[in-house]
Length: 317
Ligand code: 0K2
Ligand code: SF4
Image (tube, rainbow, N blue to C red; front, side):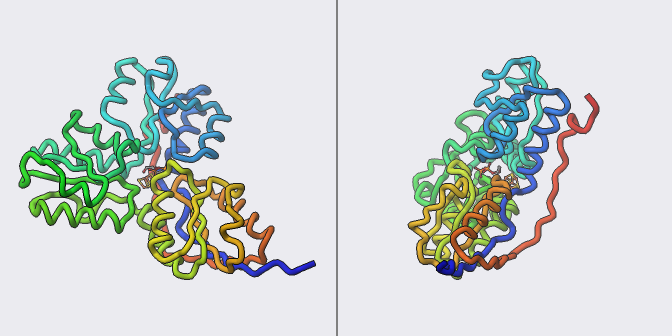
């Protein structure tokens, strides 16, 4: 038998579930325990098919709009957050509602509302159509928030008063790209208000940092995550920008493009904030099936963040 080729597997830490995802999944599970099935969930609770399928098997039903759920069943809002009109619609229909919006997204919603109350026009740095961007922009009346997706957008922004502006950001953006956009905003509008840097969360920042640290030593990097997961897609971009010649987003081990990584002797592995660790383990097993694998953890931060579930789920039925 020919010996299997040696492979150094750089394993990023932190990777995978963040505190907001962990809490959102727990919320759906507790809602099912409290009210029984079905519990309706507006949008994928987090952007991961394995997570969604597991909750569906327990009795969660995923819908895109409040109107798609019956009024006599509880509805959970996803981790990405929702526009103000969404809880208003659920209240109008007298539904039990549970908010699984990550507290770090809610913090941005509060900032946005505060700037608006202070009479500042708001600029949101984010991706058009992404549920978090839709939710944050939807904290203010329609048409009030200007969206900026990249540096080029800054030059063409038409603002009401250049001295009365503030910005907020999506929590799952590229740290480096966002710094460039913020710098462009500050250069054009020196009086603009905003957070010290941006609103990117600790989990997004830490996962990008670990990928950056391992990228120069990896011939390829695999990112476990879904195509609609903003934070996971950013990890692929960060890997390439940090000097790794090949990076691939995979939902499961079955999606590994073996031909693309043929002949490599070092691979990096990480997972987006919505990807369960079991999927990472399956990738490691798949690699072990073809290579003689040595695992090298790349630890760039320790995380101990935890969020409480909403009070309604801490009270007896
Ligand atoms: O990265 P995304 O915002 O697309 O969302 P997920 O992949 O579901 O990750 C959880 C983050 C949710 C909110 O920040
Ligand atoms: Fe919250 Fe950040 Fe996780 Fe989003 S990625 S759920 S903001 S901790």
